[in-house]
Amino acid sequence: MARPRKWRKVCSLPENTRFGPLDTSTDSNNYIRMTVDEYETIRLIDLEGFTQEECAGSMNVARTTVQGIYIEARRKLAESLVNGKTLLIEGGEYKLCNGRGEGCGRGCHRNRRGRGHVFKS
Image (cartoon, rainbow, N blue to C red; front, side, top):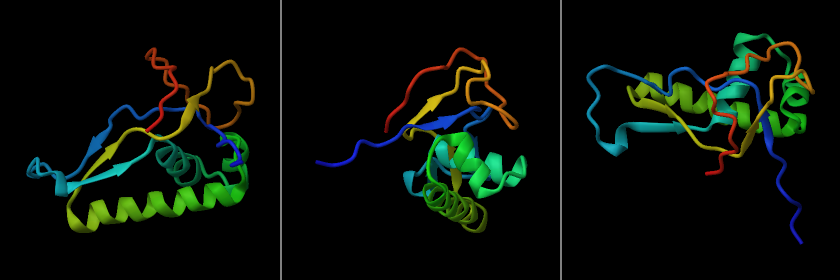
């Protein structure tokens, strides 16, 4: 029997979910999709200065899991920048933290726009 997947805890949803060149066509081949948990690793490691170990603790997953998520997120960012593709942030398997400090700490920027739902792609 397969081990159940752990939900990845996310403390911040992006204010904007679409980034890229202003003159991009709406062709589906010009999009790169980044999941919310990939976005969270970029936010915590690159913006907040977390180590991969600290990021893993914040997201409630193993460090090796964070490492894989982070590598994929950076690849997607690079592809968007280098190839001029639009980056869409959506989906993934995560739970939004409740913002009450239960396991949340440094780096928690809980987005309080009423989107505390569980999403699954």
